[in-house]
Image (cartoon, rainbow, N blue to C red; front, side, top):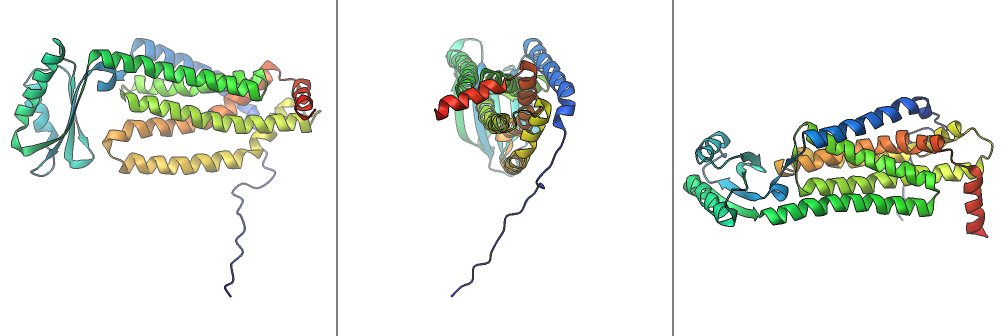
Length: 315
């Protein structure tokens, strides 16, 4: 007969933690509003460094058959073709390189001709592994549908929170999600990081992660509003955040560990995606505490409304 050891759970955070998050709510909230405004200014003035997905053009993935790819030599050869903006970067292993050619004036025939020129200067020292061409109509459609996907997701999430909780919770969630998306997009505009379909996917994932964290905190706030009918709202918000703090931090840390591994080991092609995810997880955790919760106090969430909704549900 085998004896099974009795493993007990380990508390990373002691019960009864009472960090005073609401002490900094005004500073953090208005700093976040300023960050959102600055991000909007950056987006409308500097714009984004759109990738081939959104601007049109060609992308060639090549592998050197004679050792590590010489990026400088490739850049020199292809720049001599005078094809406009050409981006060349390491990709995956040292032998791999990714070449992006912007859309050429003259339509698809001009794009094919530019592609042949690049393939000609590569010579026998490089093996072509993948070639993609995105036309202007397709790139414009991708840009439009990507924007719609993000906006529709925010609206659908807001509707869900409004249905499950009260309207004050829905407004708090809306502002928190808009904050996460705008500030992340603002960082990409500020540093002119390449913005393509993978970043749209990252923004949608950030929305899902952020709303999950926000709903957990909101659910505890609603539960405590019903439980502590005379507690000061500021104190109740602090209590609710502290009670979910262990779950919030442990979930965030495990997610960040995976993303860091992807960032350093996943290759250059997903660097921007994993960076967006890393930044989004951090800022999504921040917004659920310092944006979603304070808005409930600013809007004056009513205990009577919450208790009344409970009575309707159980009645």
